[in-house]
Picture 1: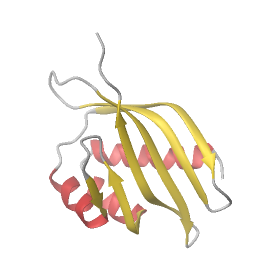
Picture 2: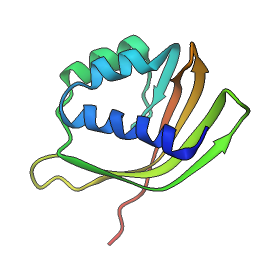
Picture 3: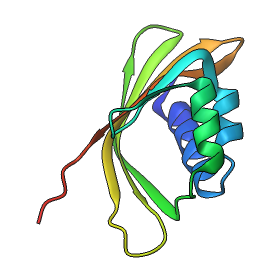
Length: 123
């Protein structure tokens, strides 16, 4: 396992959020009991993630920076990074510290937990 492999999955996820295919992507990549802990304090299980992403407005663009991989063993890892995403219009960027916990199941990486911590806007 290397950072590039899991970083590629994160990029696939963000691209799906930009082209409105996030429900399909996360429905297939999340574990059955996986959850997302969002910046607004909401915790969504896999079915709720799929339902919410089906109606979510797309992101226009995104950037991942300061990525770091924490290995928990041969089959589990956490990818931590800063995410910055923009929607259309004058809305400010959404900036958060993000953590994705991956586990290896059936020879594929699956997302067990995704968590966002918003970065306060300054200035």
